[in-house]
Image (cartoon, rainbow, N blue to C red; front, side, top):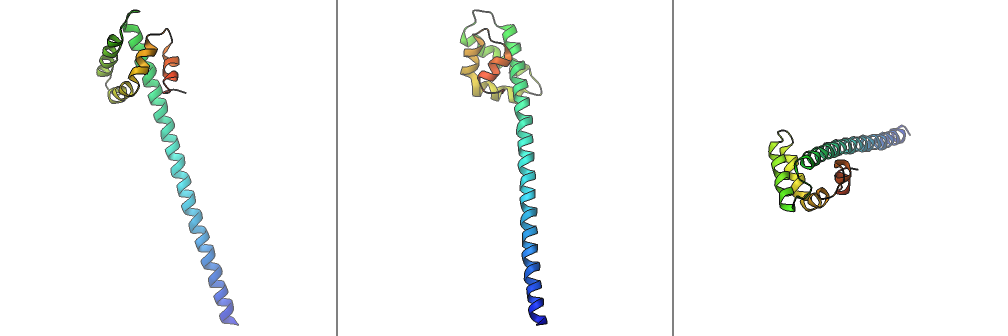
Length: 121
């Protein structure tokens, strides 16, 4: 009888230990997902801010009758001048070049343009 109680206790302990181990793993995965989501939000904000800055600078430098080639040149020149955001700027321009050129030929502001090319929300 004592042996049966011991075996049942051991079985209960094993089930509880496995349950707590699973909960700890799930909790760690949830924390990792939260961190990834936070990092993505920060990255999104940085890209949006960079986009608006780039658009504002280019809008100030291009004439109203600028050609697509003029706009492309100005975009690349602006990226070359940016110190900390140079790589982000170049990536952004390469990825959205055609959209940026089309939008920069309109009278839309920086926020509207960056939202239309899906860099800002």
